[in-house]
Length: 214
Ligand code: SF4
Image 1 (cartoon, rainbow, N blue to C red):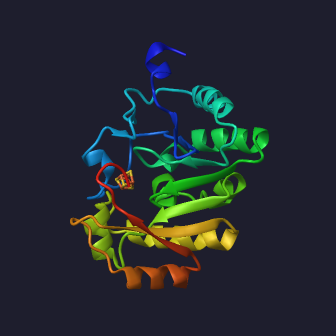
Image 2 (image 1 turned 90 degrees about the vertical axis):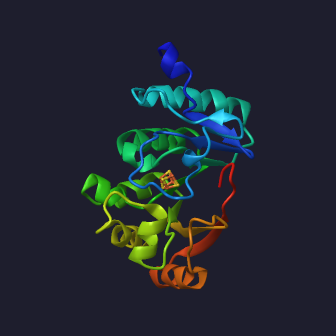
């Protein structure tokens, strides 16, 4: 592992959980994204000076951190970007965790656009490795979603997000649609969003926006 990769925060802990930070890339530019206002979460700098790392680099960091945090019960793929952009590495790391740490549950926090990004249905493969998925809904219709999340593909993203939620539910992943509230730049109708989550068969969660990390 070269020095640059060694210094990356690919894996970190927060509130007793282990987080995996695979990328700084994202197909959204949410108005509430912490990346707009901070370089770090709880003192961990999550900007990656290079993304030219390997699966083994992530697994090595994971093992070192897990050895010091054996009481941890959950691993979450999250961080300063959309984790499923790195779908191949995600699968390899999540498979390692499932094979070697069976007591850990695995969740991914995602913008729900992976099928649009990869131009194929990745959910059957995703379902092999995750117990739970948290998907950003953030809008009761396409206009509001586009204002809040500013996706690169404004024509298709919202539809793909809703389809992603529905298919994750249908395949049996513990699925939660989320909305962020409390950020003055982002406005959502909570009741309408909950109705959409209900209609898709998903759980629903309101995430309170915090300026230093939501
Ligand atoms: S989806 Fe997440 S990482 Fe991407 S811009 Fe929105 S808040 Fe930031």
